Amino acid sequence: MATIALLHGPNLNLLGQREPHIYGSATLADYEAAVVEAAARHSHTVQAFQTNHEGELVDAIHAARGVAAAIIINPGAFTHYAWSLHDALAAFAGPVIEVHISNPNAREPWRHTSVVAPVATGSIMGLGMHGYVLAVEAVAERLASA
Ligand code: CA2
Image (tube, rainbow, N blue to C red; front, side, top):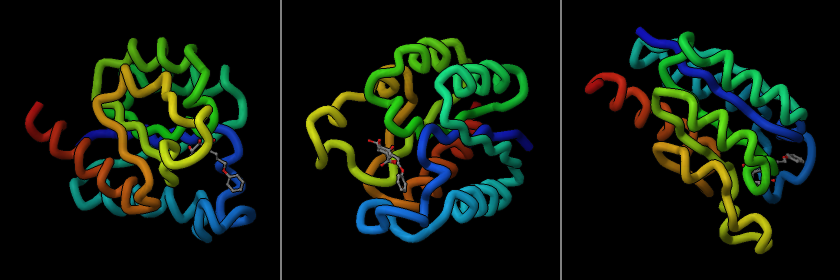
Protein backbone atom coordinates (compact mmCIF):
# COMPACT_ATOMS: atom_id res chain seq x y z
CA MET A 1 0.00 0.00 0.00
CA ALA A 2 1.34 3.42 -0.96
CA THR A 3 0.34 7.05 -0.69
CA ILE A 4 -0.29 9.08 -3.84
CA ALA A 5 -0.03 12.88 -3.61
CA LEU A 6 -2.77 14.56 -5.65
CA LEU A 7 -1.81 18.20 -6.21
CA HIS A 8 -3.86 20.95 -7.84
CA GLY A 9 -2.75 24.45 -8.76
CA PRO A 10 -4.46 27.82 -9.08
CA ASN A 11 -8.15 28.35 -9.74
CA LEU A 12 -8.94 24.65 -9.76
CA ASN A 13 -10.82 25.24 -6.50
CA LEU A 14 -13.41 26.90 -8.77
CA LEU A 15 -14.16 23.71 -10.69
CA GLY A 16 -17.88 23.20 -11.13
CA GLN A 17 -18.63 26.82 -10.30
CA ARG A 18 -17.58 28.62 -13.54
CA GLU A 19 -16.66 27.85 -17.17
CA PRO A 20 -18.50 24.49 -17.30
CA HIS A 21 -18.23 24.58 -21.12
CA ILE A 22 -14.46 24.09 -20.70
CA TYR A 23 -14.08 22.25 -17.41
CA GLY A 24 -17.44 20.52 -16.93
CA SER A 25 -19.65 20.52 -13.86
CA ALA A 26 -17.64 18.30 -11.53
CA THR A 27 -16.14 20.01 -8.49
CA LEU A 28 -12.61 19.63 -7.13
CA ALA A 29 -14.11 17.42 -4.40
CA ASP A 30 -15.58 15.20 -7.13
CA TYR A 31 -12.16 14.87 -8.77
CA GLU A 32 -10.51 14.06 -5.47
CA ALA A 33 -13.16 11.46 -4.66
CA ALA A 34 -12.69 9.78 -8.05
CA VAL A 35 -8.94 9.56 -7.45
CA VAL A 36 -9.42 8.21 -3.91
CA GLU A 37 -11.82 5.56 -5.26
CA ALA A 38 -9.50 4.54 -8.11
CA ALA A 39 -6.52 4.40 -5.74
CA ALA A 40 -8.46 2.31 -3.19
CA ARG A 41 -9.04 -0.33 -5.87
CA HIS A 42 -5.26 -0.82 -5.73
CA SER A 43 -5.11 -0.45 -1.92
CA HIS A 44 -3.40 2.95 -2.24
CA THR A 45 -4.31 6.05 -0.28
CA VAL A 46 -4.38 9.67 -1.46
CA GLN A 47 -3.23 12.93 0.09
CA ALA A 48 -4.98 15.74 -1.80
CA PHE A 49 -3.93 19.40 -1.76
CA GLN A 50 -4.91 22.49 -3.75
CA THR A 51 -3.34 25.92 -3.64
CA ASN A 52 -3.42 29.16 -5.58
CA HIS A 53 0.19 29.95 -4.60
CA GLU A 54 3.26 28.77 -6.50
CA GLY A 55 5.50 28.53 -3.42
CA GLU A 56 2.93 26.43 -1.58
CA LEU A 57 2.84 24.01 -4.49
CA VAL A 58 6.65 23.76 -4.39
CA ASP A 59 6.40 23.10 -0.63
CA ALA A 60 3.78 20.40 -1.23
CA ILE A 61 6.05 18.67 -3.77
CA HIS A 62 8.93 18.80 -1.25
CA ALA A 63 6.63 17.46 1.48
CA ALA A 64 5.70 14.52 -0.75
CA ARG A 65 9.34 13.37 -0.75
CA GLY A 66 9.62 10.38 1.56
CA VAL A 67 5.86 10.33 2.19
CA ALA A 68 4.23 9.73 -1.18
CA ALA A 69 5.32 7.08 -3.66
CA ALA A 70 3.92 9.03 -6.62
CA ILE A 71 2.54 12.43 -7.56
CA ILE A 72 -0.47 13.19 -9.74
CA ILE A 73 -0.42 16.91 -10.47
CA ASN A 74 -2.56 19.39 -12.35
CA PRO A 75 -0.53 22.58 -11.96
CA GLY A 76 -3.19 24.75 -13.63
CA ALA A 77 -1.74 27.81 -15.37
CA PHE A 78 1.58 27.28 -13.52
CA THR A 79 2.08 24.49 -16.06
CA HIS A 80 3.04 27.01 -18.67
CA TYR A 81 5.69 29.08 -16.89
CA ALA A 82 6.52 27.94 -13.34
CA TRP A 83 10.03 26.55 -13.63
CA SER A 84 10.11 26.25 -9.83
CA LEU A 85 7.65 23.36 -10.21
CA HIS A 86 9.87 21.79 -12.88
CA ASP A 87 12.83 21.85 -10.49
CA ALA A 88 10.82 20.60 -7.49
CA LEU A 89 9.33 17.71 -9.48
CA ALA A 90 12.76 16.82 -10.86
CA ALA A 91 13.87 16.20 -7.27
CA PHE A 92 11.00 13.75 -6.61
CA ALA A 93 12.10 10.13 -7.01
CA GLY A 94 8.78 8.42 -7.88
CA PRO A 95 6.44 8.58 -10.85
CA VAL A 96 4.96 11.99 -11.65
CA ILE A 97 1.83 12.14 -13.81
CA GLU A 98 0.81 15.53 -15.21
CA VAL A 99 -2.95 15.73 -15.77
CA HIS A 100 -5.09 18.38 -17.45
CA ILE A 101 -8.86 18.37 -17.64
CA SER A 102 -8.94 20.24 -20.94
CA ASN A 103 -6.49 19.79 -23.82
CA PRO A 104 -4.15 22.80 -23.57
CA ASN A 105 -2.75 22.04 -27.03
CA ALA A 106 -6.18 22.70 -28.53
CA ARG A 107 -6.44 26.10 -26.81
CA GLU A 108 -4.51 29.39 -26.88
CA PRO A 109 -0.86 29.16 -28.02
CA TRP A 110 0.48 30.18 -24.59
CA ARG A 111 -1.02 26.97 -23.19
CA HIS A 112 0.88 24.79 -25.66
CA THR A 113 4.08 24.81 -23.59
CA SER A 114 4.38 22.77 -20.41
CA VAL A 115 7.47 23.33 -18.26
CA VAL A 116 6.36 20.35 -16.19
CA ALA A 117 6.14 17.80 -19.02
CA PRO A 118 9.94 17.33 -19.34
CA VAL A 119 10.12 16.05 -15.74
CA ALA A 120 6.84 14.09 -15.79
CA THR A 121 6.73 10.35 -16.23
CA GLY A 122 3.74 10.96 -18.48
CA SER A 123 1.13 13.57 -19.33
CA ILE A 124 -2.62 13.06 -19.78
CA MET A 125 -4.81 15.84 -21.13
CA GLY A 126 -8.25 16.50 -22.52
CA LEU A 127 -9.97 13.51 -20.96
CA GLY A 128 -11.63 15.22 -18.00
CA MET A 129 -12.09 13.06 -14.94
CA HIS A 130 -11.23 9.91 -16.89
CA GLY A 131 -7.71 11.29 -17.24
CA TYR A 132 -7.30 11.27 -13.46
CA VAL A 133 -8.47 7.65 -13.24
CA LEU A 134 -6.00 6.74 -15.99
CA ALA A 135 -3.28 8.54 -14.03
CA VAL A 136 -4.04 6.38 -10.98
CA GLU A 137 -3.93 3.25 -13.14
CA ALA A 138 -0.55 4.29 -14.53
CA VAL A 139 0.82 4.98 -11.04
CA ALA A 140 -0.54 1.69 -9.66
CA GLU A 141 0.98 -0.27 -12.51
CA ARG A 142 4.37 1.38 -12.02
CA LEU A 143 4.36 0.94 -8.24
CA ALA A 144 3.40 -2.74 -8.61
CA SER A 145 6.35 -3.39 -10.91
CA ALA A 146 8.86 -1.22 -8.98
O1 CA2 B 1 -7.14 21.83 -18.36
C1 CA2 B 1 -6.57 21.94 -17.28
O2 CA2 B 1 -6.67 21.13 -16.38
C2 CA2 B 1 -5.72 23.20 -17.02
O3 CA2 B 1 -4.63 22.83 -16.19
C3 CA2 B 1 -6.61 24.17 -16.29
C4 CA2 B 1 -5.94 25.52 -16.02
C5 CA2 B 1 -5.39 26.09 -17.32
O4 CA2 B 1 -4.66 27.29 -17.05
C6 CA2 B 1 -4.46 25.10 -18.01
O5 CA2 B 1 -4.04 25.69 -19.22
C7 CA2 B 1 -5.18 23.80 -18.29
C8 CA2 B 1 -6.94 26.56 -15.48
C9 CA2 B 1 -7.73 26.09 -14.33
C10 CA2 B 1 -8.83 27.07 -14.06
O6 CA2 B 1 -9.91 26.35 -13.55
C11 CA2 B 1 -11.12 26.96 -13.49
C12 CA2 B 1 -12.18 26.17 -13.22
C13 CA2 B 1 -13.44 26.72 -13.17
C14 CA2 B 1 -13.61 28.07 -13.35
C15 CA2 B 1 -12.53 28.88 -13.62
C16 CA2 B 1 -11.26 28.32 -13.69
